[in-house]
Length: 483
Image (spheres, rainbow, N blue to C red):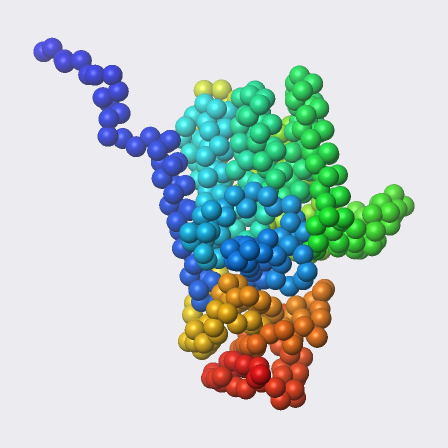
C-alpha cells in the first residue's frame, strides 16, 4: 500500500501553537484585569487617591491646564517624571474617564509579557517552557495585582524593561538603548534598574559600549531628574529625595542616612532582616522557588530595587500588591529563566522536561500567590452603594467637592476635588482650603484609616452653619455650601 506524502506543515495544521496561545493569554488577562478594576472602582471598593492624581491631571489638561495636581500646587511631573503616560493623552481625549487610564495600565502590564516570552523562548529553546513562564509573568502576584491597584508609574516602564532584556540578550545595541531610555521616561527611579545593565554587561565581558552606555545614561538622567524635581517642577517628588521619606529610620537628609549606614551597620542589618522583611521575601520569592534566580548573573539587575525595599523604613515597600515590587519581580523572573536553562543543562537528555517542569511550577506558585492580593470583598457592593451613586449624580460636573478617597476618582473630572484626609491630616494639610469647595460628601460607613479625616471635617461643617443638607441616607451625607 502506497502512502500519500503529506504537505509540509500539514501535521500541525489546525493546532494552536505556543506563540498564538501566548498572544491569546495576553489579551485574556488584559481584559480580565481591566474588568476587575472596573467592577472594583465602580463599587467604590478601593482607595483612589493616586488614581485621582492622574485622572484629575488628564481631565484638567482637556480644559487647558497642564497636568495639575488635585491636592497641592504643581503638576504631575512634579511628583515623578512620568513622560510615558502622557502618550495616552490622544486616547484620553476620545475616552475621557479614569477607566481609560486603568485600561492603559492593564494594556502595558500585559503587553510586557510578549518580549519576556520571546526572551524565554530564545533562552530555553523550548516554546512550551517559554509559554509556562509567560503565563507565570502575567499571573505573578506583584504584576497581576496591579490591574486592580491604583495607577502608578512603574507599570508603564515594564514593557520597555522587558524589551531591554530581550535586545540585550539578542545583542542588538540600538534597540536596547531605545528601550532603556523609554523605561526611564516612565519614572526617574527606573534608572537604578537600567544602570545595572552596565554591570551585567561587565560581568559578561561585553564590549565597552554595553557597559558604559546604560551606566552613563542612567546616572546622567537621574541627576537631571533630581534637578528638575527639586528646582523646576512643583510637586511632592522633590521632598521624596531631599527629605528621605522612605529611609526616615536612618535620618532625615541624605547626609544623615549615609552617616547611619557607615557608623551603625548592625542597626541597618537589624532593620533589613526584621520579621516583616523576611515575610515579604517569603511571599516575593515563593513563585521563584526561593533560590532559583540567584543561579544566574542576570539577578544583578534586580538587586538595587530589592535592596531598597529591604533597607527602607516605609512599610509600603513590603506590600506585595503595591507597585513598589513590580519591576523587581519582573527582573527576578528574567533571572529565573536563565537559571532554568542552567538547571536544565545539568539534566542532560531530560533538559526539556525539566525546563517545562520548572515553568509549570513557577506558574502554579504564582497562582497560589493570588492569596497575597485577591479578596472577594473588593468586588462586593457596599451597603451604601446606592447612596454613593446618588451623590455622584447630584453633584454637578461644574462643581467642586470634598469626598472620601474610595469615591474621589469618580469626581476627578470636576474643576476641583479633594479628600478630608488631605485637607485636615495629610502631609500638605490646609484646613482653610475648605472654603474653596461647594460640596462635601461624608460616608459614615467607610472605615479606612483615611476616614479619620472625616471627623474634623464634620465638626467644621456642623458648626459653620453655611452648608445645607442635600440628602442624608444610610449614613451618607451630602452637603452643599450656601451662597
